[in-house]
Length: 111
Image 1 (tube, rainbow, N blue to C red):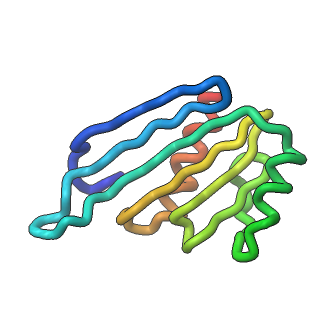
Image 2: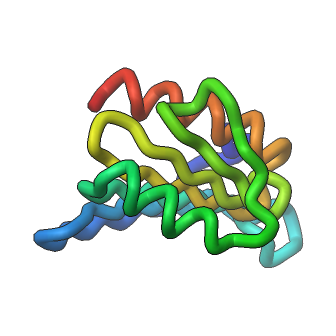
């Protein structure tokens, strides 16, 4: 997915949510490195939709969980499925919305 190797990853967990972040190797001579952050939290669908509908530039994404929205050309993808709100934040990934959908389907299959 990154097109380059994984440099390192981090994870954290609180009582309310869990976060995993993957950082890729830099592209050639540049400082740009691909990254992906996955956040999962328990949340009602009403609370999820309320939090997302505040975003003026949210784009509805179909077939990603039970309710999905994208921001910033897909670099931020958030969706709700079976009591969980899941957020994917990517940087320097080619085709972030396409990649995000693939990851979202993988996450849903493992919940």
